[in-house]
Length: 300
Image (cartoon, rainbow, N blue to C red; front, top):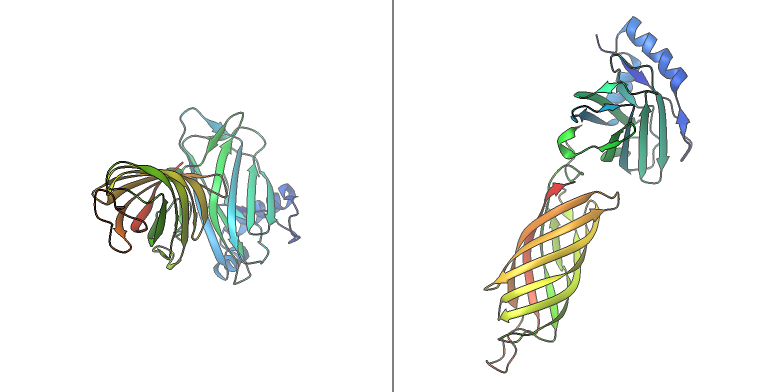
């Protein structure tokens, strides 16, 4: 038999509530009646997000688990469900719901979650148009151990979420200033997508970038700068593209709105808009089209 305990939210927007007393009552009911009753029935009728958080830091014992979620919809969240940790007292649960955000803090009051361990947390709303996606979290005591992707399992899988790959297929014009010469040269550029597809989320996206370029020869060189990505999530960061014969290798370091960092890798292809000028004086490219694929490969 497994025990689950509840914390209760009043539904008031951005109100923070501690649920130690109600949690104690529900634990007693779970032991006496089983862990399946009314609370589980309510979860099945709602869009539930189950997060299994593992603690895998040798020698670390946690007293607190924090989780933050992004939210789609405006329905209030019900009390979160969580598994009871053997040897730990009944925790105090604090929830905080804001516009497009929701957080849960489980505080056992003393260090008692001994690595290796795991806790399952279920957050849900009975509003059919409201759902949550895990974004960040940590085990805490005197130190803070952030939850990494290897420590988190989401049910159902969260396509496009923090710990899942993001694949963007894109194309758009790039305008170098001055025009790229046949040999040598450099300058600045601006880029914005005209088409962009978020493959995992089956939706649109957009990418904008600006920076500097250095050319060795037409189609060979490097571009560096800043970029912004808008898809299921929004990211900003820096990038570098190394081109050889008009084919480029893209690397980027991005940060989302929740402070999570990602490493991005990709391939891009350059093509000129209109015929190039005659060498050696005519420009190699006055304007370009960049076509590519970018993949979020690592989250830290």
